[in-house]
Length: 176
Image (cartoon, one colour):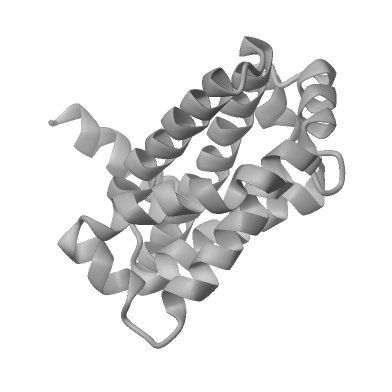
């Protein structure tokens, strides 16, 4: 988490601003979940995944509301527990078939909807920037789960070493 915070310049001022706005974040979280799942539900493939089992969409929506609120509270001041929770969210996405091609655009919809809400309610541009930073950190953790699960599966199935796997990816990318 500290490396990701440094990479995106997520500072103590960002943390303070988000924490001071935690009640507002909790208040708007259900509306943001509505934006997120309305967007996701318009995609036929995603709609099938979201509704594949009884109550899944309800559970996912509850998780979204919790996730959204945690961006403001930081759980453990944006430490290891926070990072681990984001990682586990990524693993759940992988397990149920929600791919990066769905998550990234949906996160963009959330960032846009939050921005509109911030402006409509006269909130600061600084709050929008802080929230955008933590959204991108969260997205990086969630997306990393896809990469690591895929790599682990290939290594397990093939018996390749990690070094060989990385060389194959690098040479494959160079050939494209």
